[in-house]
Each structure stands twice: as structure tokens, then as C-alpha cells.
Amino acid sequence: MKYSTYVSDHTKLASIKYDQLQQYQIKHTDTFRVTFRQAVKLVSPYVAVRVMAQIKSVAPLALYLIGFQVLLLQQTLIDPILTTLGLCAVVIGLAVFMEGLKTGLMPFGNIIGNTLPKKVSVYMTLIVITVLGVGVTFAEPAIGALQTLGASVDPTTAPYLYEILKHRSLALVLVVGAGVGLAAMLGVIRFLRGWSLKPLIYLTLLPTILLTIYVWEDSHLMSVLGLAWDCGAVTTGPVTVPLVLSLGIGIANSSGKGQSSLSGFGVVTLASLFPIMAVLCLCVYVSSVISPEEILSTYHSEALSTSTAVYSVWDQTPLVEIALGIRAILPLVIFLFFVLAFILKAKLENRTLTLYGLVLCVTGMCIFNIGLTYGLGSIGSQTGSVLPSAFMPIDGQPDSPLYGKEFGLTLVVMFAWFLGFGATIAEPALNALGITVQNLTEGAFKKSMLMYSVACGVAVGIAVGIVKIIYSLDLASLLLPLYFIAIALTFFSTEEYVNVAWDSAGVTTGPVTVPLVMATGLGLGNALSSADGFGVLSLASICPIIAVLSMGLYIRLKQVLFKRQEEDYDQ
Image (cartoon, rainbow, N blue to C red; front, side, top):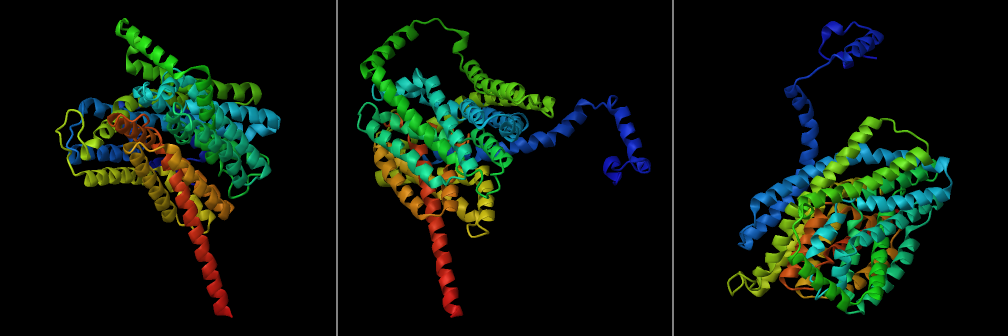
């Protein structure tokens, strides 16, 4: 062992033996002190790397939306100081939260995943995984966007959408979490049994599509389709995917079933589809217990009581967002501690570091929720609300639009396309997936090919979603044909490409992209008096699946043709 590693430039200690050096370190550990300036120098690189990672994901998208709004739409930014502070809160909140996720929550996933199947039965393991799915859904940063951004829904045009977001938001999150929990449970069973993903996709899509058709035929329920299908994209964020995957792969490895190169793929797909089915079931239930007339009556009563209500300190949004942040993380942490202490009877290796990470998780979530309201949500809503000025007059603006109708519409669609493409290319999870796929396919499916196919798919999906809002198109009439195309491509694709393609949709929906896209869609829908501004994320999820499956079939075709040419040449 080289002692220079420990003593660095202190040449006078170079001759001290290793045991003497250890005694020296122990002796002087308690007396080691640093000044505040030295502490800042030590911590600055650690903080800067994590903050810069979030700035790179937030700043380009925010600047793109602001630049488009100011330069091309000639609209000033409302309250720029508050919006800037909100964006700073998003950056700081995400940086703190992601660091807490790595040091606080992920160790739980690793320990529980590796230990759970060794100490308890398979049934208890599946129960823990299912309950955990509910907890991680509450902890997703983007899940708060549903309630925050959906507050502006007009109950006169979309009564059930208003009812679910306003009065049944907790039930909404619970059923979404139940969907994630069932998906995680099924994913673990798939790991253990070595099942193919194809049949699971078919069996999951069948009831989902049937429920979609049922809801589509009800004029009052139709407006909830966008919310239901968007929930599939919201659930596959930075908490759900790594925590559930670490548990699933840990269980598979401990059971000797995790050596396959495809271990880990497929859970994200199921975690996207099951919540859609769960929300559709919730919508059908709500429609059976309350009528649209009762929803409107309640709305008018609340409006009257609000106008005469006494102001309360708890009506302040920042305090509410902080409370939501604590509610999101605390139950999950309590459950993880319960499993670790009472079911597994295990201990954390570094309890102080884990507690530090959990504090960061709660703090980061609270800061992020505030930034979501005043930063991301504000920018997205403002940009969406002024998009129609490119091709039609809007309230408070001159009678004529800024551009001709055809050019203005083209400009708005191109704006949506570049928003989706840029947000996807900047997603770190996609880059990691690209490297994995390139290794698994031995270079046949290059990282760049996957990234550009997924990015183009997301871009097309967001552009189609914006067109859907502008022309008030039915979401089901767009989604169902696209899913039938995806099913057909899945049938002809190999297992490897099916796993990659269906999971690729989940890695594109990060905590920054989801609120921005949702806020832009809802802002545009409100400006056009559309009953439903949801649905953009659902289209942005199915299009990359089709793109990757198509690319996979193209690669296979090239390989077959190349092999035939080699055989002909040999003959």
C-alpha cells in the first residue's frame, strides 16, 4: 500500500507506517477545525456540480419559452422577478431533492431489494412492493403538477375533470399509486418467472382501450381522457423508476433470476399503463355517484362562500406547497423504516448519511413545489395562453393576429416540435438508456439512433397534442389508432426492441418537462376556451414507442439483407 495516497504533499510523513498513520488520524480527528471560508471552498465543488446539472435541464427550456413569447409573439413576461425566483427555486429544489434521493431513499431500495426475498415469503414481498408503489407516487415531483396546474379547469365545460382535480385529488393520487404498485408487483413476478413483456402489454392495453372507448362515448366524461392518459407519463419520474427498478432487480438477483441482459426493462412500461386504467376506473366510479348538475351546484356554492370567507394564513400558496412537500415524502420514509426495522430487522449501514438524505428529500420537494407554482407553471401557462396570438386575435390584443393564419399555425406547431425535441435530448435518463441499448445490441442500435428516434417521437407527439387543442380534436380518435399501430409493430418486433421501445416513453417525462408541457397545454386550452388542455403528454409517450419500434424493424431488415448479401457472396 502506498502511503502517499494518504499523506499527499506532506513529505515529512512519508516514512510513517500505515498503523502509525491511522493512529495519527484518529488522534487528530477531534481537533480538526476549518474556518467558514475553508468550509465554503470544500463544499462549493460538491454543490456546484449538482446545481449545474439542474440548470442545464431547466434553463434552456425556460429561455426557449421566454424567448419565443417575447421575440416571436411580442408578449411581455408577467411578473418576471417572481418568475425568475420561481425558476431558481426549481433548480435548487431539484438539486437538493435529487441529492437526497441518492443518499436517502436509494439505499433503502438497495437494502430492501436484496434482503426482502431472503427473509420473508414471496407473498409478503409482493405486498411490500405494491404498498411501496403508492408511496413513491406521492413522492414524484411531477405529481403535484396535476393538482396545481389543473386548478384552472372550468367546471361548466368539464365537470368531472374539475371534480376529480378539485375535490378528489387525493383519491386521484391514490389510484395512480395503486396502479404503480400493481405494475411493480407484476414486474417483480415477471423478473422471477422470466415472462415476455409482449403478452403483458397486450393484456394491459385491452381493458385500458375498452375503458377509453366507454369514457369516450360519454359526453360528460370525455374531458377526463386527457388527464387519465397523461397520468401514465407523470408516474415514471426520478423517484418511481430508480426505486422500483432497484427493488425489482435486487429481488431478481437474490433469486438467481437477474442475470438476463433485459433485467430491469418492462417495469417502466407497466408503471405507465396501469395508472391509466386506474384513473379511468376512478372516473367511471365518480360519474356513478355524482351528476354534472350536482358538481356545478357545489361549485357555485363554493364560489359564494369563498367571496365572504375570512382570510387565513393557510391560504398562502407557499405554506400549502411546503405542506404538500412534507406529505409527499414523509409517509414513504415511515413505510421504508417500518419495513427495514420490523419486517427485515435490518439496519442501515450509515444511518446519519441516510437521515441527511431524507431531510434533503423533504426540503427539496418543498422548494420544488414552490418553484413549480411560480416558475415552471407560470412560464408554461403564460406561453400557452399567448400562443393563439400568432394566428388569431386574443383578448386585450389588436384585432389582427401577428401573422397570417397558415404561417402562424405553422409557427406554433414548430414551436411545439422543437420544445419536445430539445427537452428530450437534454434528458439525462435518455442518454443512459442509449448507452445501455447500444451495449445490449452490440452496437447495432447506436446510442445516437435511439436518442434521435425518441426525441423525434416526443417532438411529433407534442406537436400533434398542440394541434389537438387548437382544433378541439378528440384525444381518443388520435390515441387509439396510434396504439393499434404500436401493437402491430410490437407483434413483429423482437423482445429486445419491444422492451426498449415501450420503456423509452417513460425516460422522457422528467420533473421539468412534465410541468412545462402540461402548463403550456392547459394555458393554450384556456386561451381557446377548450374543455380539455390535457392529453399532450399522452401523445408524447406513444409516438416515441412507434419511432423506436420502427427503427428496430429497420435495423433488423438491414441485418437480414446484409446477411443475405454475405451468403450470396460466399456462394
